[in-house]
Image 1 (tube, rainbow, N blue to C red):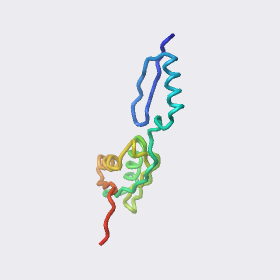
Image 2: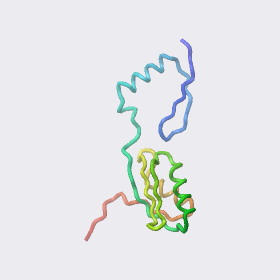
Image 3: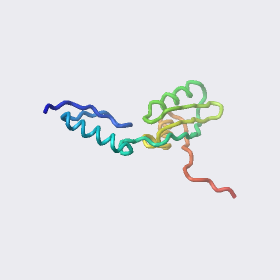
Image 4: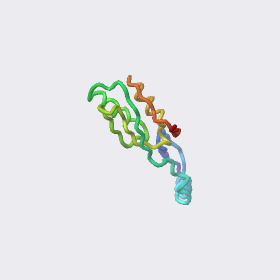
Length: 122
């Protein structure tokens, strides 16, 4: 039985090559067909609104938007200069709310991730 290279990439991970036989590939495909829940790695999309201070113009908006869409798992970004917010829809299993805010902070803005704990009202 001959061997061949199989290129594999999981969401949010780099691609790697595995040397395997056709039999190995058939076994893997059968496994993922019989157990589809095991092969699902993405969670339900989550939309968060991040407070962003320090934006002064549309170039700031474009820089933040571009930085966000380059992150793995981010599917939609809306940045508002007037409201000083970035609304991001993402896969929480690929990127966390804190990582989104950290990326904005790396650009020189002040981003505060949304609180994950409920706030109590007096």
